[in-house]
Image (tube, rainbow, N blue to C red; front, side, top):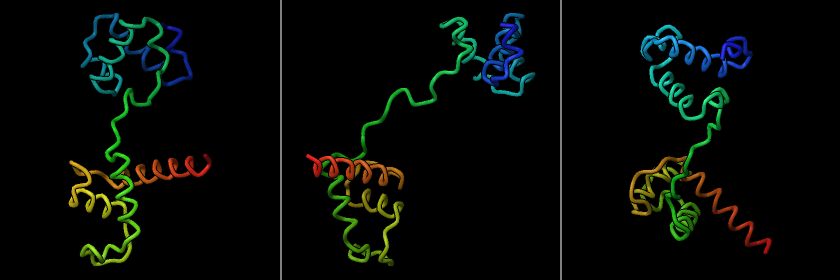
Length: 139
């Protein structure tokens, strides 16, 4: 653990500092204050060490552990695509150009989704639909 204090990897260095301070009996809030990090960061490091031992000094993946279900099913995604081929003026907007945020707002207003979604969700849905259409074209 003390070798980790000489590590060039900031993650290993920080975890080593936390774990050594904890082994000296310091509380998570006190460790956090002395290292300039959050108390939850300290607790996470201690829990990881208790579960994985020295493996806790290795950074894990930062990818989400689970993914959410798509906001749009296949049918509603196709409806979004069709909607975007029409002018926003047809549904009472003051512009003839779609934005992702506007598309998200209209999808909620039109009942294509149960809850409000972001423009990024619209972009990801269109990208997914494009991949599906590309794969169908190849087949």
